[in-house]
Structures are given as structure tokens and as C-alpha cells.
Length: 316
Image 1 (cartoon, rainbow, N blue to C red):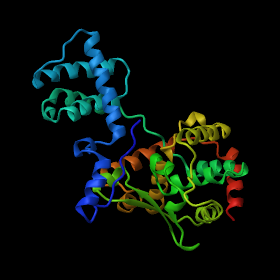
Image 2 (image 1 turned 120 degrees about the vertical axis):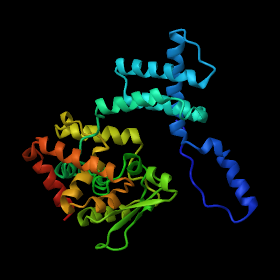
Image 3 (image 1 turned 90 degrees about the vertical axis):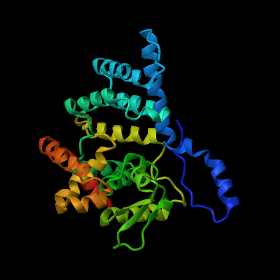
Image 4 (image 1 turned 180 degrees about the horizontal axis):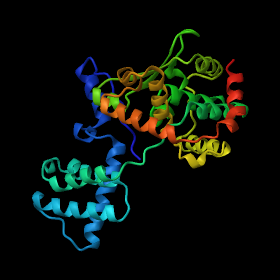
């Protein structure tokens, strides 16, 4: 999997700019993130394989491609594939040939129809009490870093990739009573705006625990282990709590945090700043769907009490 290219500050001299830009490569290679390009390439290969299996030649004229892509999308739908594969196929073809934009109207119409008829299987929001129980379970095993990761992911509403990239030097804690600031670098939203982003943390109990961890670890210490290991620990903790049937996933932390804070202050505008959403529509989806799901969740609260108490005792 390709790595995301790091942004740099423009050099003051022509020589410095040339040197840095050589390491980045041509602009054409930077139009899409490396990881996204990998997805696009995989999706295009799937489309070309479909054409090959059905002995359909790739057309030479752009206007002749739309019916074939539409047929492939119908195939993906009937085969039970996820919508993301269909989206990546169309976007990937346009990325390879930008002049295809506007030449695939039927394909885009099918994608829109797909989205209207099949609701995405989004991660359900995780309740605050479950987060506290997960943290308590980790703290009983003396795994302070994992406890902090779920707490910070929830209260700071971080995307999973952002959370997994945090190190001790990214966290600024000026005083026990002031909010902590987490530098996130160039995030998904920041790339669209062309600016670095940060998130804040104002929950005093979590700040107290974070201050202890930060004071005991060397500089540049990652908060989370390797992504696969952290995800495995996330799943095993839920299993230990007998909550695996609820379908909570790492992204549930961000969705749960959004629902938690909205219930606290009831302001979409404030939530958009906290969660760093550019579009109010996205924030409203989080809230409306999140509140509906939480109303139906029947989490066995009483069985979590000992672990919740373990968390509370640790942060006193």
C-alpha cells in the first residue's frame, strides 16, 4: 500500500524548492493520494477482468465506454459487492483518463440509484459507558495507552487513521485545567482545505491520565501500536466485555463521540467545529442516525459497572 505524501513548506530559494519537489515527484502523481491510487488501480483491474471474461474488447471511443461500465456496475450489484468498489471503478477510470468526466452519465446515475436503495453499513455509535468500560478493562491490565486511545478517539471525535497516527510529541498539555491540543497534521479534511488540523480534549479525567502517560514515556512514543495490533485489541476488548454482537468498530468512537457531545450542548454548529466537518449535512447524518441507533441499543449496563468503576478509580 502506498504512503501518503507529506506536505512541505515552500522553500525560500529556487534551489530548495527544486530539491524538495524532486522528492515529491511530478504534480500529476500527486493529484490523488497513493493509497487512493492503489484502490483505483485494483478497481480498474476488476473491470478489465470482467471485460476479458466476457470477451468484450475495451472500446476506443470514450462515449462507448459508458454502457460497459454500467453493465459492470449491474454485475457488482447482483454479485453482492460493496458500493465502494463500484465508486472506485468509475472514479478510477476518470482518474486515468480525465477526459472521461461527463462521458459516463449512465454509470453515475446507477451509482446514485444504488446509494438511494441501499443504506451504507455504517459503524454504530459507541456509548460513553462502553468506552469507560473498555478503558477500565485496559487499565486493569496496566495498558494505559490503549485506555487513552479509546477515550481520546471518543471525546476528541478522531477518525481512526488520525488516532492511530498520534504520538506523545503531538499532544500539548499546558496545565491540568486547560484543554489539551492534539496536532493531527494534514488530515482528510485538511487536505481539502490545504491546512493542518488539530483537535482539542477538555475532559479533565482523561487529561489527568494523559498527563501521567506523557510524563512517563520517551518523546515521539506512539499512542497506539501497529494498526492491525490495535484493531485486534479493540475487538478482543469488546469480546471480553461480551459486546461483540453490537457491531462496534473503531470508527464507532468518532460517531459515538459526536452523538455524546450533541446531546450535551445541542448545537450542530459547535459540533461541526469540534468534529472538523466542513458540511452540515455530514454532521446531521451522524447525529440523526446516531441518536436513532442509540435509542435501540440494549447494552447490558449493569455487567459493565465493575469496569466503569475501575476506570473512575484510576482517574481520581
